[in-house]
Length: 297
Image (cartoon, rainbow, N blue to C red; front, side, top):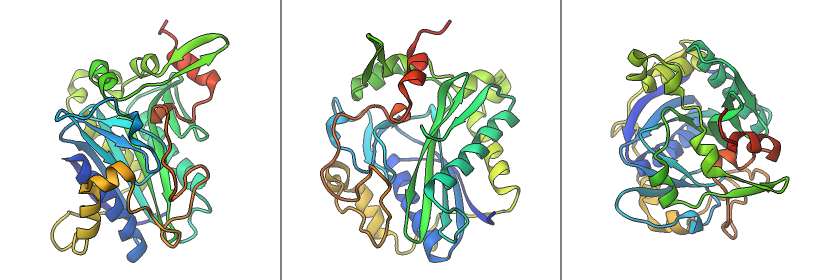
């Protein structure tokens, strides 16, 4: 569908990764080109959704960063256990709407998992998740710009440290059929992809997964790019924004209508949303969440 620029698979601070996603969105509108990138973070970070309040945080300390992303949804923690992926494209008519873009890349990611020998994979486009054995292993969100669009996703490569996670953010619960089902239990049950790889491949899991997805998405039609002074020229404004506490705490400045089209439920401006659940389960239906949260057999 596109010829891609491939911007690598790097470990960088969370705020730098958020800035580079906005760089990709802008680049796809200016030239226009499609961009692909994978990343992890050098230190744990709680990532807030674009329109989310900071009430999701239990605390803030030097053990983790707090950043805000471009895409909607709610809070999620990035760490060394997570591989993130980003794809930006020009709005050239290749995708009629954001649902089409979301479904297109979700299927390619799922197919890449199968290429790695992982079985029982399903794609839930209503919940924006990719599941293994009925449990979330990856999720994604889209920002639908006027001239370009970006899909951002996360893959669970190895299990979360639940003590750290639950001490940093609030995890929700649902009452279903008179019983209580928790996000904490669902996260504990996540089928981390590294568990499906042999010991040799587990050591290079991030590279294996990224390369498998890249092969599916670009079919070898990509040009390797690197971030340097020339390619990042003119990015000082967005770099300053993502480093700003005003952006993280208040979402200021917000996007404007001539930049981004609103997705239902995601206002560009207005009051920030409170009392939101963990991002990977935000749109999962109760009947599915119940099974994800139940003890493993």
